[in-house]
Image (cartoon, rainbow, N blue to C red; front, side):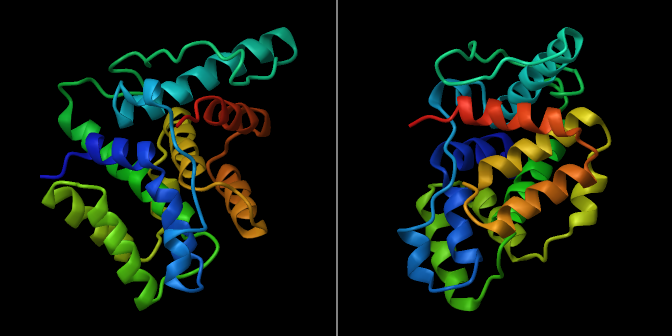
Length: 222
């Protein structure tokens, strides 16, 4: 069985999901390996695990958003003033309990699918690009089950309805949006439009979407 937490952590830590986007956008497969890069989460955040890191980002954004709404405004978050990322409470709407393996796996798969959908937001996948992407997947050093799962998911058509319908709570909607942000470094109109559409379909308020983006940007690292 694939370890979804480890798989998600490797994607977030390597920026690999974002680098898929260059090949998925249409164009020569060689560009995939050199030009298009995605966001890369910092090592401190990833120490808590891929699923927990995404949950922590959403948790921090919700806290700041709630505080900002109560105070009538929000202070900007940046890498210079962002507080240390705190894990979301286990068993909360942000993070299934450790013993809830089914919940952890389901959340991890949902987030991976969201990342793949975002990476495919400005194009389509052809056979040549597919081969280059599979080579990048192999370079991640995943275990066979995780590698097979990722390749299979990348081969499926994007099902936006399924991704949106999986957001059964506002907290999960925020996590799906964060995973999508982490998959791409937005530099095309199509990518920006995709994220705007996703936020709207997930019913994420505009000011919360801004805070989610701030949290992601503040936690990017080498």
